[in-house]
Amino acid sequence: MISLSIAPDDMECLFFLGRTQTGLGRYGNAENTFEKLIEKDPDYNQALYFLGDAYGRHGRMADAHYYLGLYYKNEGDFKNAEFHLKRALKTNDPDKKLKIKEILKEISKNR
Image (tube, rainbow, N blue to C red):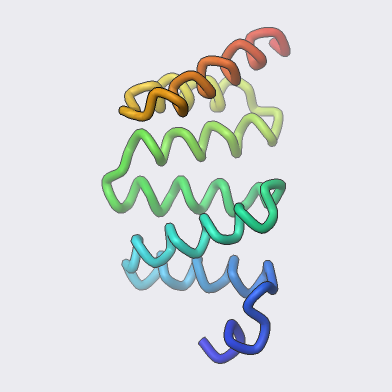
């Protein structure tokens, strides 16, 4: 992790650290890394995908579907976005559930 200590705010460094953590099966670490990356750059779409992947591998399916849904929405793939976001509605977080419903309405207007 030398490169991260040299450049802790380097987006590419964070991205590949998260990918490496996922590959090593350190899903909790990968989740934290991708969350940090998205916090720093909410438009880093690939980080949304891999955060969803890490959550899914860690068994956090509602979170996985949420981030995969955001990724596909940003890619303009509204069919896959809708698929994942509908499954993300199983979340226990009422604020996130409301946000998902708003995004689904926005998607339905774009179809």
